[in-house]
Amino acid sequence: MNPVLLASVIGLGGLGITFGAILAFAAKKLAVEVDPRIEQLEEILPGANCGACGYPGCAGYAEAVVTKDEKITLCSPGGQETVEKIARIMGKEAEEMIPMVAVVRCGGSVDKAKSKYIYEGIEDCNVANLLSGGSKACEYGCLGLGTCVKACPYDAMAMRDDGLPMVFEDKCTGCGICVEVCPKGIMELIPRTQKVYVACVSRDRGKDVKAVCSVGCTGCTLCANPKFTPSGKVKMDNNLPVVPPDWEDYETAVAKCPAKCFVVRDV
Image (cartoon, rainbow, N blue to C red):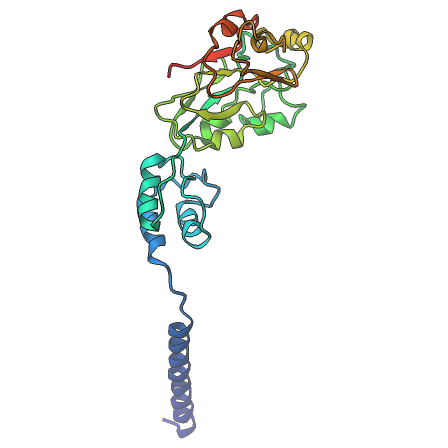
């Protein structure tokens, strides 16, 4: 072999060995030690990567709990059992998680709510909402295109024949994804122990509500009347009743509601 070429090969080989040694040394010195608790948390989290905790997947939440002292009650799909497991790993006291469930706060089905026009575009509520707020005459009403159903990672929702979504409460984990994707804000998380909620989010006055939906809340205030709700727990806010989770004396008020817009859950 040409002496010059041989020297070049040897020189390059020597440089390669030298740089390799430097990189190996640097990798060892600069290596970031990963807290083993992060991996332990990842193993006990559901692995759904639904984002309900506010982080990009279970791995992100596990890291935040360890490195940022994030709350240990943010994994709604995991429930109280996961909270207790996280608490043991982190050496903390297990806080109580309030189980939540998604509800559909709109009763404006195709037979009860009027439409402004016939929509024949992309089957997505957010897209339809860009066209004059959607086809529903009620600007607050469900658009019925099933974006919430498609987004649910637990198959806990389906579309009814009347154009409204429904929630299978036994499958719902309270992750809140349906709430996030709904452009009309008719999906809401409530405590599983809550017996009653209002299936309407319209803020319009009674006359305007009745003009577009037969089951919309008209803001009549009957439910907030102490005569029908002696506890006084129901308050009116911008033409809508605010129903607390612990409303127990609801029967008379629900029966008196002229629009029949209250939903009583079997809890």
